Image 1 (cartoon, rainbow, N blue to C red):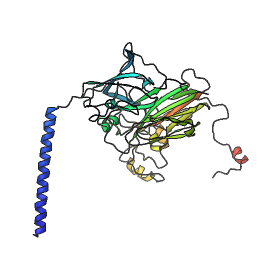
Image 2: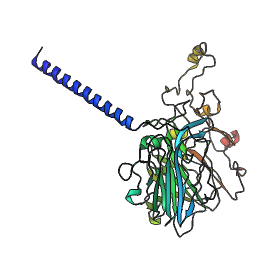
Image 3: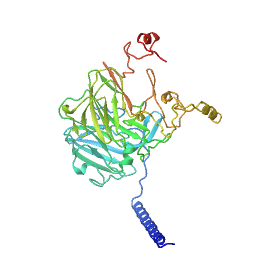
Length: 440
């Protein structure tokens, strides 16, 4: 054996021996740490939102579709809130219920709605099995109230309540979320919106808050995977996927503000509206001056930001509002299947049905028809789930909702009643001949 080889062996042995020793010391240190701080038993997930306490208020003008406002009461001129971080059961859409983490029995947590200049005291109780904190994303607060565990405060231990107190000094749209184990806690649903109204000025006629989120939920599972970094298969607005998303409503002539926040782990979302244009009037950094605005039909909402848009409701109808990333408007779509578009699978289907009766390959002519077929699927899963619409199946899911605009609103507007002659329909032979259209 050469001298170099012997040297390599000696060095390799030293490295391995050192690594083993380091691993042993690390394991011993971890053992000592866990001996000193035993794991907190997990509480069972809460079933249902926490009720508004007697004597507290939950009034306001911002509507959080599928959500709620944070209750408060006035004590000595200070608005007092109580936020409870906890595990909970949450229905994303009928057929898919998960065990999430959130606030006050909800994900997203209730929207905190205040007025510029309000002094607020916010008690945060931690019922999670691990530590947490709350960061007031975009809100200017004293450094010690910023909610970054280890840097500006101690993390809130399980079972304890910490108090934050500060004045909301500037108006705008902001968010709240943990700044402890963000990867896990945000991925499991610990997010919420904050709206600070200007002390003066006219508010919009309709005001909505929508938090965008993404989840990795394998078919049949109840717990989202917080380790996911790509290939999310459930996309939500206020933690609901279509057809479980509540519609937004407005009357013709209304000034409508929609406040989008994105606290999803990885993806930006281009949110598109049909039938109207809007302008970004506010970010989590502050208002956008009128001279800096321009009309758009889609707005990109990057991760960790707010984009508040305004539009004038002008055209009656049922107008989609959705993410324009095509896989973000599908429910639990898997991406590990072969591409069969254009393939002739008749012979393969016939052979496989001898072993698996009822087998049918999917995707050779596209996937649109799958939403209305009602195939058997694993329990607690909604792959390709759509919804019945006025003209057939709406084969959309995920980050999709509907803006319902009417001349006048009286209760549930239902589906839009189109005036005669304003709905696309099959062309007759006479119509095609009149316009010189030849169809193969």
